[in-house]
Image (cartoon, rainbow, N blue to C red; front, side, top):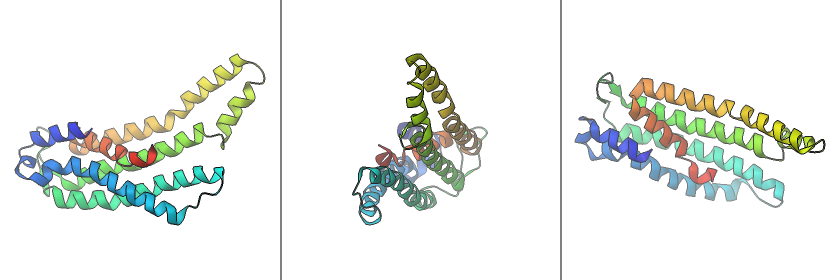
Length: 193
């Protein structure tokens, strides 16, 4: 996604004029790493891990902290690096810098939603995994069928988040917006892994 955003930024005659505009996708990726380090430091203050149950709570909290910290960073980078209006080609002659901000933030917060949904459907703390374990008592086939059905259901929210991000980002900035939305989703990857 960083490479795609770099290629699309270099194709814009307006963004080609400024180094900061050209480096905007790279700066978003790099700031995600810095925010990740700050989040790790904040975790030691906010979340004390004494028992195994505390790990899950801390991981979810770190994902939220990194998303919240990344939000003003994206707004700042968009304001500083991008011109107020620029052209991204046919159909996108008047792209405003805040359109790019919205695209990245949609990806960022969609990534948080996908992270929470994934946690719900894959953690033993919540009902879905326990229900799959319960169906194994009847037979293996029942467990497989139920697990497959649950896997399909677990895809609904992530697909909606991804679809909305792509739809809105493309409407605002074209393919550059889609690439920026992907950068937003990957912006907190240091915490999600």
